[in-house]
Length: 193
Image (cartoon, rainbow, N blue to C red; front, side, top):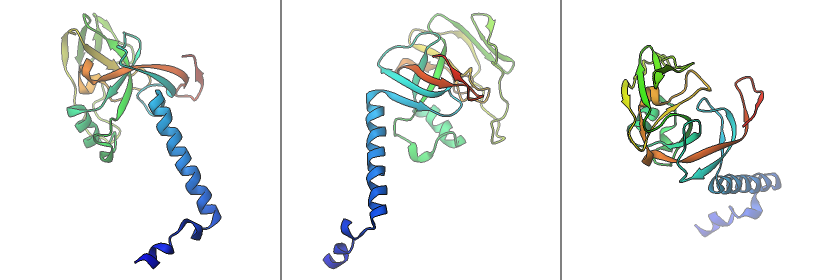
């Protein structure tokens, strides 16, 4: 058995493989350190693609980006639909979404669209099916948000998974506020944070 492991000593690997392993370890450590320091890279339909600084524990206001930790029914639905990988379950997966409604706001969601305080939200159309052709659940809402409740919405993409489909979220699921540092729009043009 010992002889088998002696053949696997690092000295037995080709130089190019040692370099690849070294840089893979460095990249992993850099990504972990950046996340621990509060940096997040967004590449999807939740928010404008780019780099965000996360202020953990800071309560977002209307117009801010919130960091939503996927858990419970929201995480289950995201996994069932393939929006996130099942292997990520319980890994503290986060979505960055725009805060469109806060405590005291009246939110109404129907199959016709989204209204906040009686004003229809532009680009608030409701999808009947997701990109996979599956019917999407509609979180029908018509009430005032209580203290600690948020309505999260994506103005970045009409196919985003947000409160139109998973409903109102509580403060306990919000990890903090995400501040855009560098973002690009859907046409890959630089946007101002």
